Amino acid sequence: MKGSGPMADFANVLRLLRNGRGLSQQELALSLGISKSAVNMYERGERQPNFETLELIADFFKVDTDYLLGRTNAARTAYPGTVAAHFDTEDLTDDEKKDVENYIEFIKAKRNRT
Image 1 (tube, helix red, strand yellow):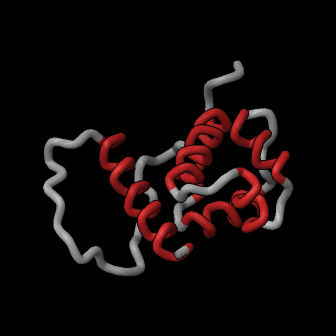
Image 2 (cartoon, helix red, strand yellow):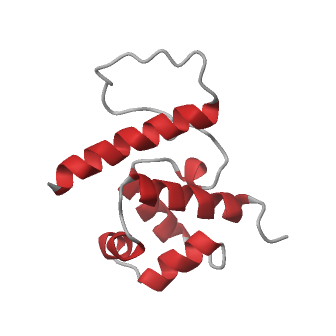
Image 3 (cartoon, helix red, strand yellow):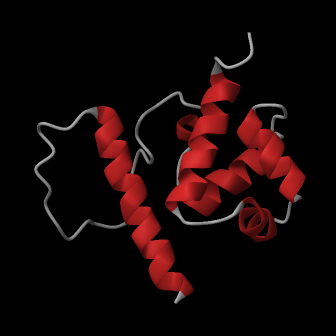
């Protein structure tokens, strides 16, 4: 069934991550060394990345492949660094927490582009 399952989750997660970084499909494609049409088809759920490309995307966005595939809501199972701020997330849903994480990534990417 089109629109559900791991590849539909992948399409949505990829689009959210790309948009969260403020990247166009072309910019992401260039960063990954793949075609813009491949990124477009991934985001529409019409094509699936091979394992190597999936790992490349995960490394680029600093997330686990399970996160990309929608199998977990945690972007990373272990963070290499420490967050230097405390956020009261008690009343946030898992999706809202994910939005906060994506926004932090967006801010970092924006800083690196200026």
